[in-house]
Image 1 (cartoon, one colour):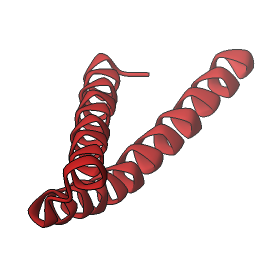
Image 2: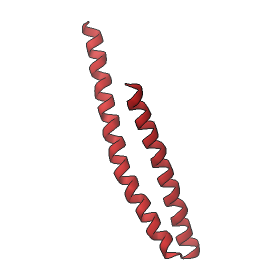
Image 3: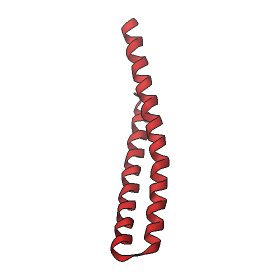
Image 4: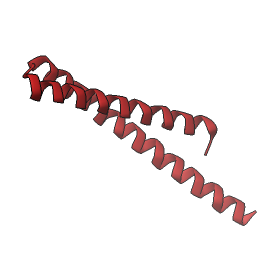
Length: 77
């Protein structure tokens, strides 16, 4: 796997963790204090998290395919 690809995947996973933490904090604020705007922020974070998860999933799959192709090429060489 290329260093750049690994860096991008790692950065996106870190962003996903931050989005989840934000959603959790806002959901907690909504349930404990009843703040309606916190619920909206939590939903927004979760929506962005879903989009980012699709990107990370695709990047991981592409990296896996590249690694498998690399191994096959090294075995035949």
